[in-house]
Length: 171
Image (tube, rainbow, N blue to C red):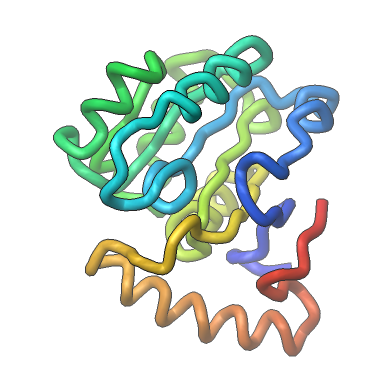
């Protein structure tokens, strides 16, 4: 298919069939933060803490973001998960580091995010499972607006080719 076609596409992170990922041998879930787990200006909620705690029973849970250490500080403290800030996605450097640091094979990793241009492209470049979710909110960081512009062009082409269409979810 394409560099921007995810392995799986779901409405949000709660809709992902984690039991299937576990059966597939996925050991590590790498989440994007902004507009995947929380809105861009939201602090870490107790609901998110509880949900991540449940996932940690079956998976190593990590967060990788292009945002700053200041933005992720409350998440790091409350979620008690490793967070890699300023990751420069779609660079594979941070995911490669994670793979080595935790002795994980590529088929044990899964990246989950809301952007084709960063999260999905990164996963495809590193040859790991990718899951696209719809953004939680319409409001994005200013820097993301260019990515969304390019994403709309890609999605228009993918829809025509029947690769991917927003709102048509699949596993």
